[in-house]
Image (tube, one colour):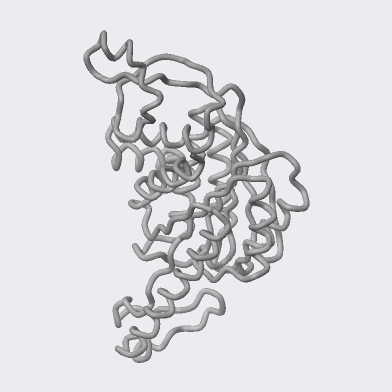
Length: 295
C-alpha cells in the first residue's frame, strides 16, 4: 500500500518529537491561533511553555504537581495554507530534498495541528500566472488531498514562481478572516508584495515559512548544478571559485536580512527551513513567536 503524504508528515512529527514535546507543539498551536476564546475542557500536567495563568492552583495543591486547565475552541478557525507551487519549488533545498517535499511537510504539519483542534483547513496554491483555491474543510482525507495537490502541481516544467499572484487573489476574493500560513520560495520580497502583505495583515494573521535554496557553490564538482528558472547549467569552475562562493554567501545573507526586515516591519512571524528534518523545530519556534506577539 502506498504511503500517504500525511502519513509521512505524521512520521516526522513522531520521530522528531517525543510525546511531551508533541503536547507542547499542540499547545503552541492553540495559543498562537485560538487566543483566549476557549472553553474549559479538563486538566493536564504542566509542561514548560504553558501559560502560568492557566495553572489550576487548587487542583495543583491536591495533586502536588502543577496542573493546567485545558481548553477547547468555542468556534472553528479557518486556516489557509498559501503555497508556492511554481518551478522554483521543484529545485533542491539545502538537504538535497526537493523544496516541494519540505513545503509539503511544513504545510502538512500545520494543517494536521489545525485538524486535530477541529479547525478548517484550505489551500491557495499557484504560480506567477495562475492561482487555484481549495475549500476549507476539517478532515484528514481533505488534508491529504491538499498535500497531493501541492505535490502534483510542482514540477520543473511548470511556470515561474511569484507568490504575489496568490496573495493578490486572496485580497480580491476573500472576505472572511483567515489565519494564513505562507510557504514561500527563497527569493526577494519586492515592494508590490510588501504592499499586499500590508493590506492582508489588516484583516488576517500571517505566518511565513521560507524554504531555502540549495547552495550551488557547495555542490560537488562531479555533479551538474543548474538554474531551474532557465535550465542553464552553472559552470563548475565558476561556482567552485573561492571568490564566487564568498560573493554568493554575501548575497544570500543580504537577501535573508532584507526579507526578515520586511516581515518584521509588517509584524509577521517568520522562519527558514532547509530540510524536512527541521520542520518540527521550526514550526514550534514559529508558533511560539506568534503566541508571544499576540500578548
